[in-house]
Length: 503
Image (cartoon, rainbow, N blue to C red; front, side, top):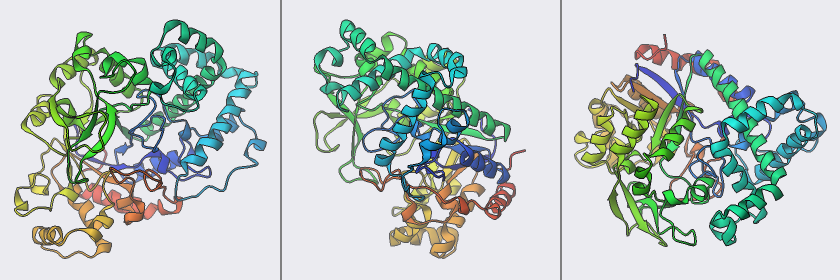
């Protein structure tokens, strides 16, 4: 992937403002794109857009191919006759600053059910040709996903490996009977996906017209409770009852003394290689329908991954297992051509990871918050003078504290190292703008900054604390009044001064 010198902003769509408790793919998204263009930015980076389940993490979706129904713009549905004014008479008192996913699950699903009912009963039949075409073009993943969600609902939300054997093991006769019995539910699931992709396509086209490209994530692993694991069980390590024999995670690191036990099923790479990595080819094809640039989360797992025996209480007692990343990427690139890929090569980066990244010329990542720790910090790869051109530099990511919050809580050694390196002694108030400038001034071709850092917000605006669950993760939303023209002008000036302005 060739990157021209440029910059962008990291913001997940759920964090957009709006009246219905969560960001949507409507006017506020277009307003944010307009702001990015005014600020001279070229990229909007988002997290995975899949339908979230338990824990609300975008990295644990019910499907690697489907879209998140929570993001559907309800105002557009009203404009197109799928909802009417009375449907909005009992809107809950949503928070403007925090997503309540439990409330979204109940209220928004009710609204989408009403929208489907209006379509099904003939009030919006003008959509039928496009809906039928969508079902045909996306059938390879959509049929499995719709039946998975319908069966999950019929089983009271239980994960697929807790269903009765016929449904769990995909007995053809049982699935045929379920598909007929649950036809109305599967059609509704498909219609909601049609609405999501219709709106996302329009928004992405709007972004392109404004000169903005979308960077989006492929999480390396799929969720245990997903249509992907259920429908392609032979591609993973499962026993006869659908229980994983080994699961994913990472060993003890910067974020956790006991490592991170993610619990995702691990790929049966031998099985994947037998059919030429067809599953991965389809997955990248699906991602290209959503994004202009693909960031691969946990890229190092394509060189070697941390295998943890199931069950386990922590990630400490695992082992590194080699993965056939070279063969997989050769198959994908052979089928799809050159791909716009960013490799998230953070964490335990060994020579085999670097070779895999560099053999395919994928730009890696650097996070400036990681640059100033340790004793002899001068050898830190993330220090600005050590960055490479073919790299994407961040002040922080969704897994970090905000830059202001990080500086407030930084160890004295990190503070000392920063002061020595920059010959400065910044206050908390000026640190985030200072680190942003350092990122933009670096030689890395692409600089990306979370919107929270541009707003100079503290820990209260943190998006995620890895290894934890609860209502403090994934819930942050910004206030529309904070997206000021003056801030766009300031960012545009910095972008121009550092040679990153879109031409």
